[in-house]
Amino acid sequence: MLEQILCIDDDPITLMLCKKVISKSSFSKEVITAQNGEEALHHFNNLKYHNSKNTVNKKPELIFLDLNMPVMGGWEFLDHFTSPDYAEFNNANVIVLSSTIDPEDLAKAKKYPIIIDFLSKPITQPMLEYLKKKIEP
Image 1 (tube, one colour):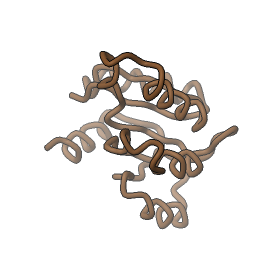
Image 2 (cartoon, one colour):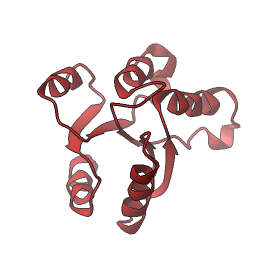
Image 3 (cartoon, one colour):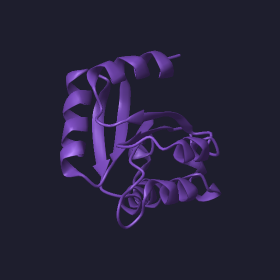
């Protein structure tokens, strides 16, 4: 079981569903959410600059990321997140969850080594079972 997962999506229903399915499947102890890439980066900045030593280890091990969001989309988030500024968090794996699987997006995803899979929304119990096998050592 993972300690913490971050779900980044602009749709509140998707975020609620994500939390419920993950909780029900005992896939992670905690699910935190952000409604766009900027909000997610703000979370990482808080971890980096404002938290005590006790919460430093409280960082997401897995990120479910939507690509199309207002304010800051998934690709822009990845550009920032994979920069040296966020290097201490880059051990988190990223799963892109998208409503459409565009071949151009699949090709673009290969540029980001932290992306371990590209899956279609919504998140489901069988999807989590598949991911458990993929990410567990």
